[in-house]
Length: 535
Image (tube, rainbow, N blue to C red; front, side, top):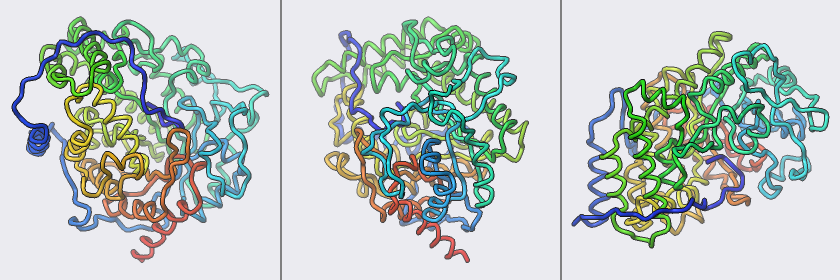
């Protein structure tokens, strides 16, 4: 699932097969939710992991002193800087939101930057351009062949028919950012789907394969050509440009949650993944059989009446009979982390002072419990200068409603009504159900700033000072290709809550071209107030 401007509420599943799962329990659903939440609180932890459920009002502020050097980053699309004018744009974000670090895409393979006009902020002082007919590049840096000798992949080479094809984004940004005391970071989200397929030469050779042997829209992290492409790309960047840092991210679920949430065939089962898992002692045939049965069961549930019994028991049955499923899932996650480690080492070998960190997607920070179980922020900190968990308080509400609760109710949680499923979610993720929306409110109002506090605090506790924590404070993020409005007071409070939780800085998110001036000013007001309080 991607950070898109126009998400759909549902994805159509493939054809289904009949389910044979059964249910046998005397517990009420509310008892079940209560008991599982209690068990989660006392369950043994993996080595090095930490569980905390911070209380926003009851816990004293862990705020660190703010100064002019406190990291206040902002995420921006390249075309915005060129459309609004680099100097003018930098002045605006500095004056409104106290921004001192610009994070701008080097490639845009992950999504179409030509967003609907109605989702863009109209008050930046420059007339909006109709985006739909524009021919924008997917690559905004100049690439150099010598850095790609160990991969078959090649970046797009925009010709003169593309807008801004003659511009060199990072080269043009160095002087304007330096004279304003701003840092310059490259920002990357890995690509997938039609954009990557059409823009990256030989992308078909690195596609992940699903359990049925069919190619997917994603690349495989275990494919050496794909991993070498990323290390070559960041080497090219940091040898060719004066960058202060890099933010890299990958927005996708692992094979288990891919299937549970959508009924899509799990991946990856390419030759590289099979070899990896075999070397770890995982039986490939049994893993394939387990995932096949799981996929069939979920697809059957998607075509069953609401409340179909035996759904959750069916999931447990597969996991108990095929423990290889969990082993495969875990190796998939570690292959992603090894890619991140390779990127980190490459950049540090070139420029040790550069700050390298990770964008942790919203699904990974705030609703994928499998992801939480697989990897703690403390483990990630070993190869991180910073971690940026997404904490978009407003847009989380409809995302939870339609991308999580609704999909799971059509899958392995079909026995649990939506309101009880939401209670279960709040309990297991450590969010305060009294502060956050009910099911009926999820389409109408966002999460509270208290959510920002709790998720930031969890990251701060787990990293234990080994990496900086820069929560992504998101606002004005569209929903269903429409503006999803944020309230300046809530934006102000979200920034304060992030710092109250012990954040080392923040990243103003999601995209600058969506952000209304009152909300940018709310960020600045909070930063100024907290800075003055430390003086």
